[in-house]
Image (cartoon, rainbow, N blue to C red; front, top):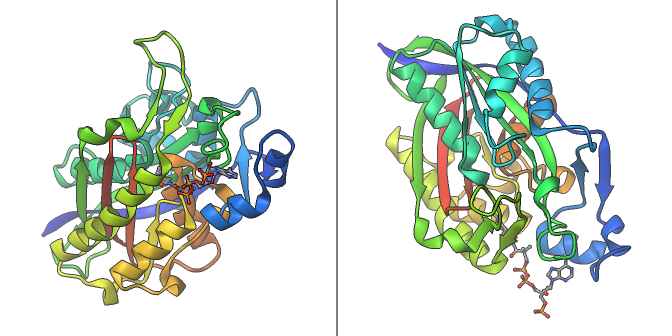
Length: 323
Ligand code: UT7
């Protein structure tokens, strides 16, 4: 028998304010047409001035717990992927822990930028597989609107705010790819590329800083690395592209999503796409897309899902789940 981390609930939260591309035309030398054609993004949500990343995470967590029919007090561990935690410390995860009425578990943040949710899922899976937790809340939540340079048209039109969450629970499986739950993971990073995508502030500068990106280079790495990590994760559990019901990619750019699907050999009719409505929400983009995919009837129990993401670090990876 093999302990598997099985998905019991999923939920998401998006801040109320929706910002269409046209709004950037007022302040920047840009157009709705450029943003749409180069990135696939049409609109994004921005948090209200008094809304923090943990606020978004708490709403998503409560939605996932409701679907799982669980109380926050029943959770053993909370793993929250974010690069925009409310404070330098304590973790945003401990803020969620408090809000869901949990005092017996443990909570921590994972920081792997846009690959954060894939890293958090892999770590949550390891906690369950090793017997260190039976029930884990895994969240991706971001307020990237707080780290934008609003004069840089090459970055500020691309990002948005939001949160998504999954509840995982240990179940005994057979150890084969027929089991429900997380089936395989593949994580990678390469710090040689740390200057391609970073925030120019932090503890060292005593400032929050803003996002800096060499977009073309990140694009090139994404196209090269994403299909490979997804293929590797599938191979590890004896599955291939034909077995995949849904690719749920990090939602950064529709052109990256399309070329990765093509390289993988999966048609766009088997890819969950939300980039047009959410923009790039970094670690929140995959759980948001999973939650939307379930809500609109695309993702069903028993489906084979492959998630893949790349971001600052560079850090990238993939997770295969039988839903
Ligand atoms: O989630 C983390 C991972 N991040 C990503 O995956 C992002 C990866 N990169 C990308 O998605 C794309 O590289 C971008 C969407 C950022 C840019 O698309 P691109 O096709 O690579 O455009 P580019 O950077 O090569 O820029 C083309 C032109 C430039 O003008 P020149 O130098 O050719 O005259 C830019 O200055 O487009 C210009 N440009 C804009 N024009 C209008 C850049 N941003 C804008 C803009 N509006 N917002």
